[in-house]
Length: 271
Ligand code: ADP
Ligand code: MG
Image (cartoon, rainbow, N blue to C red; front, side, top):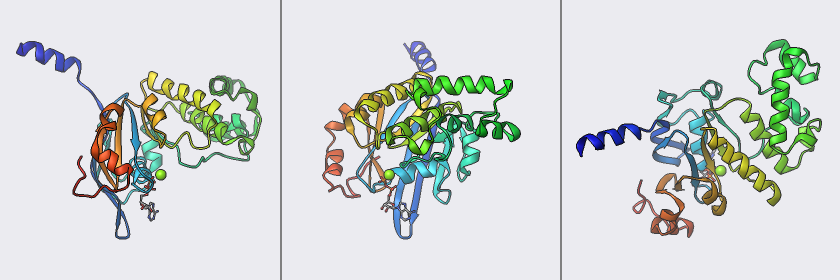
């Protein structure tokens, strides 16, 4: 029996993509993140839910290097990235989107994706921006077009990003992320401003990320979307992860219920 146990545990050995140890980030006297420890296995679609102001965005800011003056440590695929700046973290393949979209408004939809493609340095960068394509660009160009089509944006290639609807901007942001071949993505409310029709498309694309083996961490309010997409969910309240599990586990968790009723206290909080 013992031998069999060992074989099973070796086969099931999981690699941890994102690991947080005792993360604390305060603004003035207020701890926005107040002692978070978390292990997210590679390939997991991990949801973060919790009331407004519970520290979800700050947590993702720490992981992605937007906020660097926190206590505790952050590891990505086994590398200690504590305090690293966002550009260095991006180079390891850990990418993020923001709660409000950040695109180059005065550039076309296609150019927004093209400039994110790897190996677009120097002269190539300007060719991409100004649309003077050479043979060398055909690879990334075809890839960008294919990607835009898969995100339902092929008819909008030449539109300025600023002209797109809120939902189209969200889809464009994800297309831009995808061309960078991420190993993990952090998405801060990716469904904000997305219409019901586009919601289905976005849901499909997010599932596609997971199918490609990419680890996804998604902050989202709407529990039905979280339930559809996430393998595992962490509930934040007052800077702490107060519960973790699948949606079925959480539905009956009294700490979670009280957090959503706004009455959870630190004494009740558990990791
Ligand atoms: P969530 O994303 O869960 O709504 P946030 O991480 O945005 O929560 O915020 C958590 C807490 O930290 C809130 O009380 C918020 O006011 C505070 N906070 C976030 N960012 C800043 C900042 N740059 N300066 C001061 N306080 C901040
Ligand atoms: Mg937020």
